[in-house]
Amino acid sequence: MRHVASLALVAAVALSACTTAPASNPSMAQASPATVLNGKLVGPNQMTLYVFDRDAAGSGKSVCNGGCATNWPPLMAPASAQPIGHWSVVTRDDGGKQWAYQGKPLYYWAKDSKPGDATGDGVGNVWHTAKP
Image 1 (tube, rainbow, N blue to C red):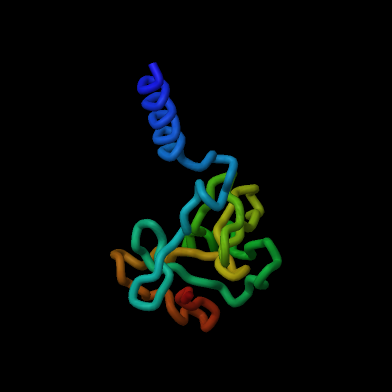
Image 2 (image 1 turned 120 degrees about the vertical axis):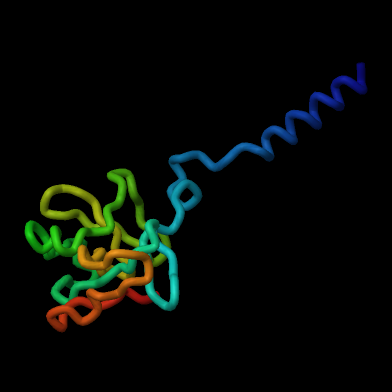
């Protein structure tokens, strides 16, 4: 009987060690929204990300909306996204959420056609590749 109770205790401890962090803990449930590739930030699709000089860092807003966002699609965040490290979330004019890195909203460039392209760097002297 004692042996069975010991095995039950070992099994309970082992199972509790296998559980994952609850989704309510954002730092555990959410991974970084972008990675670094060749010194640039890239989205989950490996496409280059950009920052816009007219966005004020830390303002919590994006000024690229409407037609601008058609050419420069935002790196969207889920509605439940929470800040993590250097990453923050800004609210767009349409109510959607967008990822920002060090307070600057991030965008893709519609004319980049494949991972590694960075044809948006320097457009209008106000768009730049996002760097860590």
